[in-house]
Image (cartoon, rainbow, N blue to C red; front, side, top):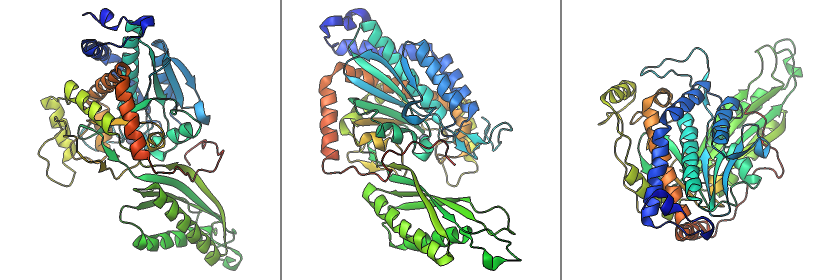
Length: 477
Ligand SMILES: [Zn+2]
């Protein structure tokens, strides 16, 4: 049966049979192969822009232009963020959403070479592989659109441009403003050093800034007139470091001082410390946040300064895994196959392994990890959690950089700016497109994913530390 015949359903809205779905997947895969050069070019552009969260102007525009040229309707500047967008094609259900990220990480400037070499023109780098992430997801959305259009199939495919993932902001405010909630299923992926369908929880995370106000004074001539806001920050961090002894083992608390005063001869009148508070369960994050508020008030009391602001920029929940989607993605991943690398790519990766601790039996992963029976736990966080509490979410990781390299490292930047990361990107795009087409073809799969979602969400109550009505921040710092 030809593709047109398999998908010629039109007004009758019949769904394609198994042969038809297989042919649709081949068509999507062919589209991705035929557009590989465009995908590489877009990845390299976004990679070279290396724009950090909420400043991804050119990166978002590259994806928006590509989607518009391919017949998507795109709303830009959604949820109060200039670099957030929603692209949509089709009408009615099922509705399948795909996620794209494109923010880089500050301090990770790196060229696409196998040794540490920052680029002279930028300070940031794609140490989380979001250039291949955004490009791969967008390609999947366009490939699915081509197939829906060719077969006149009912349904809607959406591509969400979600900025500032690294600070948990983009999806948090988009979800808060009601995006994603009308989708039947949301699919996503991420660059990793291995290839696997995701069946795991992540950690919940709150991003909070504590600001103190003191009194400026000459630090030597009139110290008695001054009150140091920096002292309050230091005492707060000391207090929180003592608190660590009495929190659950799965919790993680890390911080940077984003304002520590100007220079030593001025008693700092303002100071700020920025915390990430993480735990396996969101309710624990809420408890530790409450404790840290008391510590901050104590620090202000001790220093006779004022706790002038507690600013919750983002509060994200743990991702809830979905068995049906994990299995479906795994099947599609096996069909597509893991990325295969050339000897030159393996040599490149091997050189980037040299500074890492440990022995590695491979330079790059070329296998698909088995799907675990029980959900695992990833000790990282993602604002995908804000979606996964409302809609079934499926995800995969694809080997796109040096085996054994940590995410957020120069090795990731180096590999995603060249063919290694792009091989992962092609596998991800084909797997996402295939999975989406299975969902379009089978309402039964969507029902099962929804049942799984209801079961795992079951008794959980959604609460957030995000103040009601708070607008998305205009900048990270
Ligand atoms: Zn990431």
